[in-house]
Image (cartoon, rainbow, N blue to C red):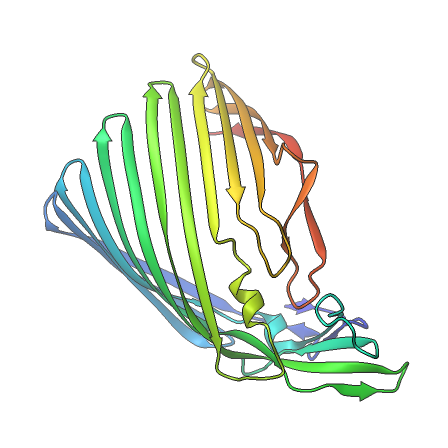
Length: 321
């Protein structure tokens, strides 16, 4: 049970709501051909108060023609169930960064939809792993995702409101009108240069296309399409400095988000750990070390406020019993 009080920007249909969620997962692995062909299948069963029972099955097949080669394929279904905000809330936001030049102050009202349902995903994956040498391995995977009933927002028309001051309201309602597909690939190389020194390098590419079944005066389709970076690169190294000390460093590059006007960025991460024994570790960790702060994303729902991710350095103590 929760209780949420509304504000001038946020209205709630029912301040107090109790929600129940039940889930279970079953999985089995079958050696179709021992040491050569394995089949793994299972499903997640979930019941929620909004959409009832959701079934999310998956199947994965792995073929090993040689001890250094593995070819695998997978098919899986996933859902995202509605949140309370998407069902019960009305939110007023300022779209000034997107709708400049209007004659009057303008607010967008985003109304939750009591009939908003689960978003669906059907994912197809194909991958290959090869050990070229005992110190060098390569992994690659391609994927295709089929999306349906994704969250959409379409504004129909402007409404004039004279009080408390003359302004415009753009009413929008959350629906399940978006559908689309994404595809891409990922590649990873791992090199164990020395017994105590390892390198990793990865690259990923993503392309997303979304379509709206309901056409209106304004659609957030383009914003959703470019809400994820198209390309990412990551290079890291880990080295053991004696029996009890480890040093790790990593550099990542993330592509720009054009619609949100967020430029591409490169950042450095580092970790120095001391392990006096196998049950204790003390580490100093640094994140985003190249800049005091940088932008990675903007908030949703048309506001696109500037959100900065700061440089961070902290200590971490791990005890295992």
